[in-house]
Image 1: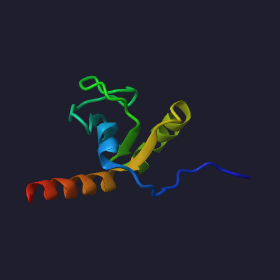
Image 2 (image 1 turned 90 degrees about the horizontal axis):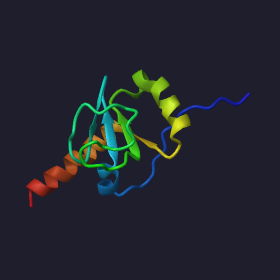
Image 3 (image 1 turned 45 degrees about the vertical axis):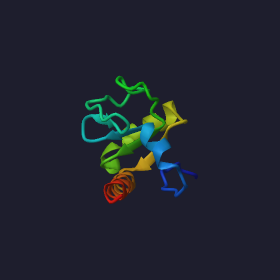
Length: 101
């Protein structure tokens, strides 16, 4: 019997593209990675401030949000889940490079 599960996959992305369309989700609300608007509900398809569509979602604690992820995957198959820690690490690296210029 085959059971569907989430599995992490590594894929190359242009970080600017991901950042401009990412919803970063914490315990109760999300924030737009592009414009930093906070308290965004998970069911919104785009940022209420900058109007960018959310193509990527990063959960701070994915294990806590597994039921939500399953629902989103079924309702919005075009959304890609990304690793929050990877996102923040790359964002920090790029910010540090800009400072050191």
